[in-house]
Length: 321
Image (cartoon, rainbow, N blue to C red; front, side):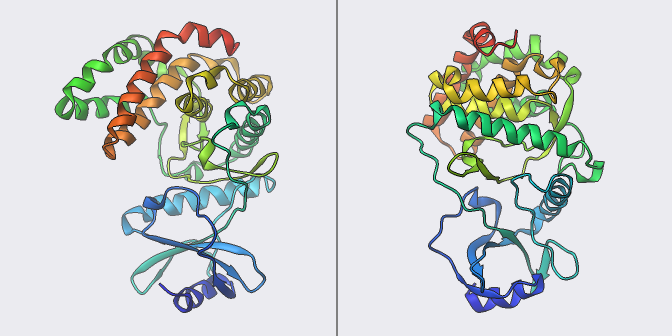
């Protein structure tokens, strides 16, 4: 799709097209759209033009409603609500294509070599979750994202294990200790953990960082009602996947400390936090299986067992006993 085509479409959003910006990086997961490209308007404000598959329309519209509602609840929240057209719609159908326009969030590239030790990133990442929890308290049921009811990891893991049993019997043996533990301890009481609206895929790469804070958060595909600390568990779990030592490093410890000291997460939210973290790793295992990433599959299995073996130690250093 060329600039002329895009210009005629974005005019429906009240945007005067300036030029394509194929020179700037597009963060997030490209497979969640059919096509996307950055452009700017005549005042040099950057946007992303996206074409959406019909199968994803309901989810994209739910995400758009949610982001708009969160932005109304807290205009300072660093998110980028989708642009509304002149008729008030986020997603338009144009010549059989379904399109949307998202403001481009400018940020600073994440330094993958040393960010794990950055205390300030932990504080900033926690501040976002705290602000989002407060803002989401006013969301109506139809604005809580594409998942219509609380997401239970035990159901997700059971379905995944069924596929692994059929296709990866050796892998099933390797994750056996983790499954046995979760089946006996965490999953039977998972339904007692308070739920709240969560981003659903909160990790350092889905954060657009500024020099000293969070410029924005992207990729809301898995947003919905989940265990209250699901996002925190996913964030810390991803830090440890980068380097297990990061589980006791600066970013993780400052992140958890900030959350513990806030008034929005109760003691019940922290019930079984290391087990919640362990269970969230199955979503990542599913991702590695989907893309047949054998090296990452092996690394994930090793990591899961490491978390299980060090559960008591992690509980102590995170000060959540």
